[in-house]
Image (cartoon, rainbow, N blue to C red; front, side, top):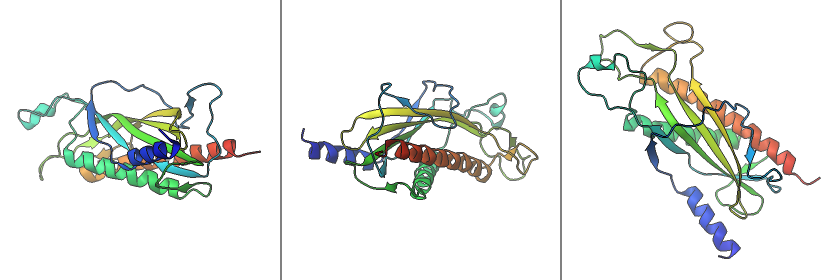
Length: 223
């Protein structure tokens, strides 16, 4: 395959929405808030770049038991299925927020095609777990959560000129409210409260990813 053909294939793959999949495979329990990169080899580093191509975020949810029986069947459960509407919302929020944060960078420019001088980012949220039980009908007692859910962010860093995977960064986070309607350290267990907390975590990831990309930009810059 010629280099132009290879670049065209890579750009096409990066611009096609990736599927929302489910998995029961556990994700690494890795806390890496700085998104430090594990390189493919000790001497691997990105070539000089000033542009970034962000691939669509892939989602993978942990398999959990479906909800059956009366409402009381939620008792004793700590993991709950994620409705299709919520999956679609999470996918849209992750793609939007990551793009917004990278677009704010003063060092790199977001582009829609791979090529020389482009660093390709392939993000994925894996082993996504929801702690939110089904919403109670009006009139029922409110539920407050001290954990909204958790997920692992995995980002692959790819050379836009060759398609070579340079390395990856992994960080697992628990969405833990700093404060909410139910008191310090809790949030109301409804769609609005949970969505806001999830977006806060995504924003933190997006900011951290942008910082890491800018650091790599300086490291790869010709001396």
